[in-house]
Length: 606
Ligand code: AGP
Image 1: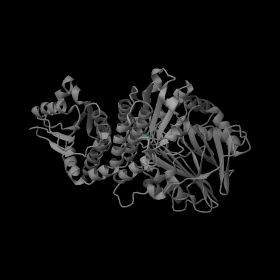
Image 2 (image 1 turned 60 degrees about the vertical axis):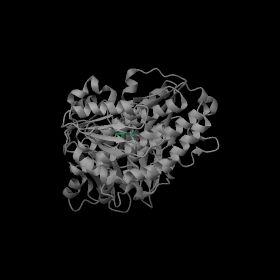
Image 3 (image 1 turned 120 degrees about the vertical axis):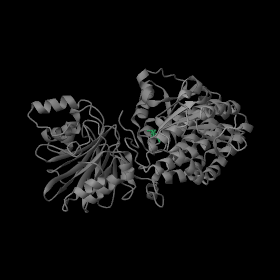
């Protein structure tokens, strides 16, 4: 969703800020803008549309060595030039870029209007620029602090002021804000992706913190301006991970990276001697583990569907009742938080606000929550009692792929660890470890079949509407397959339990509605094949994702064979062809693969 980039140093700010905004495009946005402070004071350029439209529209001499920029995802008011950030005060001295939502914006707008201020946008953010300007404080930090005292809601924001031309003041409450340290130049951003070309030495602000950023360094403080002494740390990340390189899109690259990311999430976490996993970051000793009576997984979208796969793994391997729930719904049903339940929050970005709020709700009520998170130091990771980093590497495409594979494997490790403290035998532990160790090569095997999947995808892309069906372990696979397909192909793709077809959806099956059926070689194979017959009898075209040797009888179907794993681990391999079906369908339809319409990489507003 919205993104922030800022620069202060010896170079021209505008090109650096614009390049940073391009790197945040994957987050999803509908307008962009920037403000620079130079010899001629504060200058602002902003417009609805792409960053490249903004860059083309800027005057040639848009100079200044300090600047802040923004990509906006419309919340208050439509995507128009006037609503794009930065927002300024009436005199044009102050410019503010803001991620998040101010809950009391209507009241503040009314109060400003009553005071004679002419508001020129529909946004909540504009009030901040006026509040900063109207503060009587004599420092920019004091002015920002005063403005923040009046607002309710969430923010990551950056403020510049023509009277304080050496500094950017940033603040965080619920929306990430990072300060990047360079050589006599400094950066700010809402996402590391915008900074890695310049620096990997960064400080993450905590909620409630402000920072003053000048060309020579930064200082952090609480909102009452007492200092917090936050220091920057150099992150061990490879900036190349943020480049698409030889690949046509980030999604294609991230699909291809799965064998290596699968190796990384498993590395150093398998204990062959005791046939178990070791996830030290969970902070669970064996006695506590034995005391867990239930596992509840919380995530959103695809993370929720992998959470369903993960809950099934825990229940099967550890024999602990487990289920997954959409984090976006969780806190609104006033959930009972049980002291013996282990709550698991799962998120690639670690920024998804619904997941974060669910974690906060659990902790507020005294529950124990651990995270399976990809982005190191992200809000969800920091908020949890313990956790497991997924080591998928940077994921840029909106459609999540490699992060999901690592989430599944993270759950498999968790289930193995819980299981081996309880009743999972050493023989089963060894069987699963062998299965896990085969996964990276099996993913390579599946990816080698890409041409075959591409052909099938082109046929599926012609349908306006599709079903994805599966049972038990196969159902979350079907949900994830439908999710990926609809996300980037914009086709109506709906997931059902195969067993539920007869209870309604079969009415829609006809020659123009293909079904992608997940049919693993498990205890339900006969029932699944029977359902295929019912679909075929109604003329429904079938694509069946299955295992070699599964007898589909005389059902007319396009068959995609996937290597077998241990049964409990099958879902992760069954998911990979569905990623490629979605990818090639979208490619065939000519869609923007990495930036599907209406969607954002990190959903940071409720
Ligand atoms: C996945 O393809 C989707 N873009 C989306 O459902 C995503 O999984 C969801 O928004 C959760 O994101 P997170 O993993 O960063 O929390």
